[in-house]
Structures are given as C-alpha cells and as structure tokens.
Length: 139
Image 1 (tube, rainbow, N blue to C red):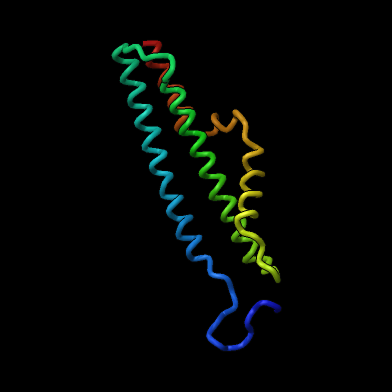
Image 2 (tube, one colour):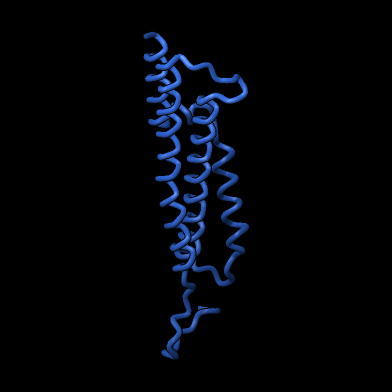
C-alpha cells in the first residue's frame, strides 16, 4: 500500500494514535468534574430553598446547572468526534492521511448542529435537579 512500509525495517507503517487516545482518556476523566459541579450546584440550590435565602436574579442555580449540562454535552460531542475521526482513519487507511483537526471539527460541528432543548430532558442529573427543586419549593 502506498505510504505504508511493507518491509521488515522495524517500522510498521501505521500511525500511532496513542498520544491522542491518552489525551482523550484525560478528557473523559473530566466528566467526573462536571458531575461534581452538578452535585455542588444541586446541593447549594437545595440549601438556599430550605433556608429560604433570596438570591439575586442575575445568578441562579438553574442557570449554573444549564451551563454544566451544556459543558457535558459539548464534552461528549468532542470525545465522540475525536473517536469517530480516529476510527475513520484506522478503518479506511487512506493513502493520504487527512487533516485530523479539520476532520474532528467537521464531526464535532455535525454533532453540535443536532443540539436541542430535549437534550436537557435526557440529562439524568438535570431532570433530577428540577424535580427535587420543585418538591422542595412546594414544602
């Protein structure tokens, strides 16, 4: 195959994605930080409701939770885009390696274009937050 070494010169002729996969693993670990942030927002919001503490309308726990859901969605989309680009190159083994950055950006934008408000209803922590907040406000 052109561009690939077929001799036993010690080179396999394949691209190593170990650095990208390592960085991707680190990004996946960041998911726990987002989850912790959502837990903290929930805890503060519930404490504010229970103590009947007034908070300025400029900053609400609801807005903070929405921001975490958006970060979560974007992180998931980026991870999927990178994985998809890597898989594309591994499976297709194109003669000329495509611009991986551009390929990831295209895949990421395609995923982002499908965003909708329904994504919030699919986020378990967000739904649970909204339900618990309503229950606390009734009391």
